Image (cartoon, rainbow, N blue to C red; front, side, top):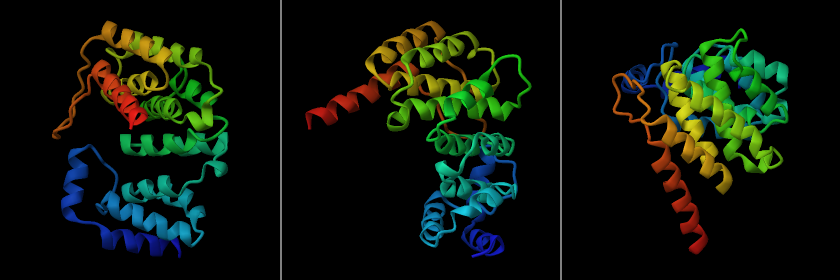
Length: 235
């Protein structure tokens, strides 16, 4: 299947209603409006056909639906540091950033990239910073790939969140809050640290535009995560 054929499938799967929904959530790229359920089905079809190498050209097409599909096809073993830095330049929405971060989180260079993309005083784009924080969140959750990362690495990023979250840009503030929750979900030591940071920060205000999305309270959300963990242990 060629890129043109994939685009034809995406176009056939798109709906005007989904386009309206995605626009309300801040998507500005061209798109067809493909649901996530249909994205998953198409991704499985392409993977079965061995067409994961279409991921990069789909991403670079600048079409929103193609970018989402690309994140589902992209293989961690194919992502070098050079390619990651190339791909992050194409992020124009939180959905792109979190999808890309989830893949990069499974690569050996993830920690170095996260440090670079969230660093203060470097030349960086708004969405690169967002993706850096999404990457840290994914790494906190991806224990299988990053069990060797010391708690101190995550603690240092908690300090940055505590210092900067209330003054940073809207989307980055939202992702920092999500990263705070993810770090607090990694282990009991980081849970204690994250809850203390959440208490020091206080309420986090995020403008979600024309959507019904709510900003989760980090402390209570972390508690819910650990309640579910304990519940699974008992069952």
